[in-house]
Length: 160
Image (cartoon, rainbow, N blue to C red; front, side):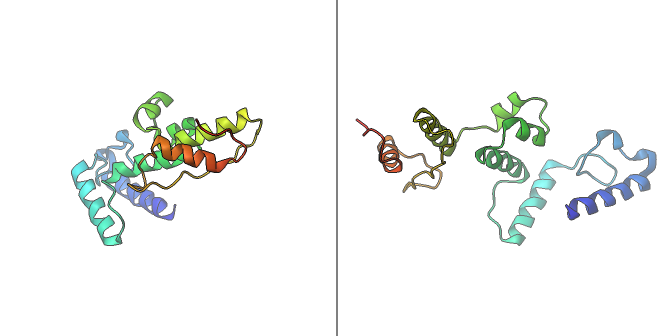
């Protein structure tokens, strides 16, 4: 938050320095000194250089941060209307269409919660997904899922 407050102070200085020529009508958080939009390619290149200097994993540019932010919040169970507001979307439908690709974790979590509710447990425990050999994001095969499902609840009927 300190960095954002400092950025805002610097932007206010630019706004006062430019006077009426400053494009305050655009109301941009990150802009050129005169208040006009930054060139997207320049922003991406500066972002990638900063990521490289920090030794962080490249994720594909600043827009990927926005997508990651939305995805992680949704996977953490934050209501989609809250995520939509944080992203500044006009309505939840935009968020659902653009950012809510339902991941394997969300699918399995929903299935596990539903199963627990059907079994009479009103406070279902979220059980971590099984690890898969291919990749950390690969969806388990149906066979792997059945084995995992059996291992999570000894009272459950065997899968046929």
